[in-house]
Image: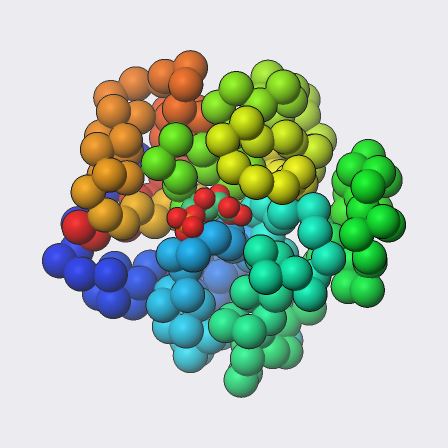
Length: 230
Ligand SMILES: O=C(O)[C@H](O)[C@@H](O)[C@H](O)[C@H](O)COP(=O)(O)O
């Protein structure tokens, strides 16, 4: 892994946007389209605002999520809604959206998580660039410690996305698997605040069974680029 430390959130977000845009442009120099998977939660908004201003051929980009809460895309906790509001704007609105949860689905349509996952698998392609966050419990994407599906999500032959049931956070989830994340040519991780930095330092020391993010950091074929700020 490669770790860069910044003195504030805005600088970290701007540097991460530069790096993610550069990774996308590198892919677009070699092939017609590039697929970017971003994370949701509360922390990536400044990064989204910076990234949407970067010089990228957005019309050639597929945009998706590393994970999504299985809620209607109009729900306040929907990562899709967050991306639409903060990233799919201006030139970046030309990107093609690959939905994990389809727009228009109602709560009752989403009760069958297996059906949600099957529909998402039919739409998705392997991402080229993945931007991850991390929770203070050591989860990344929706690879949550103690989730019953964690072992399946970490398996080398796991599909691109799976259903996960967090024990430490609300909502059933759909998440990219470890192999989908580590199959991307460029993997970034954003870490902010003292509590997360302490968890990250522990995960950086070696694989910890209770910190799924450590599996990304120590994947033998992945050089995760970590952007940290206090
Ligand atoms: O949907 C989600 O919850 C995420 O994609 C998740 O993996 C996120 O990156 C971390 O939980 C950090 O979230 P915060 O930004 O809210 O701290």
